[in-house]
Image 1: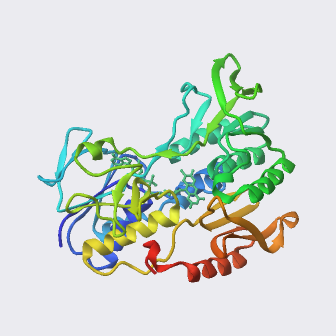
Image 2: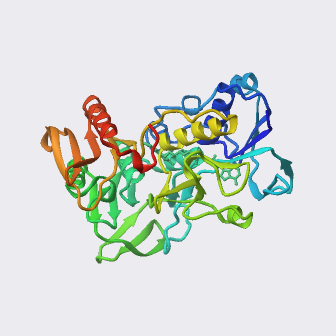
Image 3: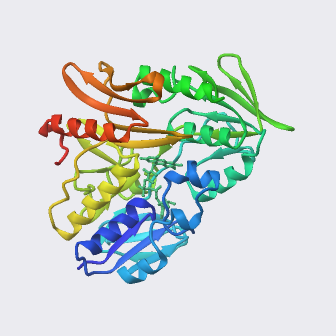
Length: 392
Ligand code: FAD
């Protein structure tokens, strides 16, 4: 088999390597990652790992012996910086170079930097295990914590900070936390749930200006509120580093443009995980959650080996654990959709919501109701038209 070089040692990179072997790939596999940590799982970084209930060994995605057993050459602390698709070489930031027969780009994403917020010891972004360890040290009881952005990572961090005894303020540009993801009504419920547990929200406003003062980072919000914080955590979404890929002539948009099977615009170059955006039917669909990243890796491995891609199903699934709240979502919430509670109720904190657009089920959201969520997920799968480009 051909020699496969995978750049990016996260979930998607490792999954690609493991699946290649699972499918009988005999050629060499090199897994090259910028980080010095062996491939690990990111979701715990804002949950159990941040709270110290899970350690480094618990979040490792593969045991040390697995790399040797599967014949995966793991190269840590090395960043790819260029590709030459014609010469089939990848160049590294340290000046080195490697030839490939198949290249898989699985470099993930980085946190979006907040303009107007200077880098300072009080300011935190969260993507890596090192980020999580640094943040954990800052979340001491009584600390004033400002979380900017109430998406799933922001709310997970805010919940963890509350559990640590911090005083937590959440700033969100939308009218409600997670509103773009789950719709207005469930988002209003979510805000209430967190408010009852001590989170203070400033929604519908943004950080205008910020300054590091002795003893505090001061944030001036657009609505006139002044927030003084010992710790500022930004959860303002992700950006994908595509410049070096575009410079190689690969088609990029919000991410590295790939088709359903993970092929890029260049022969023998593939993409997997968060770096990817898929273009179909005039839509750009970036990957940005765990399951989609893992599924895309399985598809790329199948494409490289030359077997039909696995029957994986669906898009847009994610979960989020916020204190003792388990949220699960699948599908989409079109602006015209309405939310209907089909199990339990908002008051009980255990419910399932179906999003209905016209007479079509478009998405399912559940709070602390995993079994009922699964039923909704299957119902959604059954209603999907075959034309949406999603394989079943
Ligand atoms: P990554 O996991 O980011 O891995 C990419 C790797 O490539 C990194 O190690 C990076 O350092 C390396 N790299 C980058 N550039 C280069 C380069 N040029 N050369 C070599 N290596 C490079 N999803 C959910 O569905 N549910 C959750 O609850 C959830 N919680 C999350 C919590 C946090 C704090 C974070 C950060 C993410 C969370 N996610 C969650 C999202 C999920 O973790 C990602 O979708 C998933 O990690 C994507 O995997 P990936 O391999 O594409 O990218």
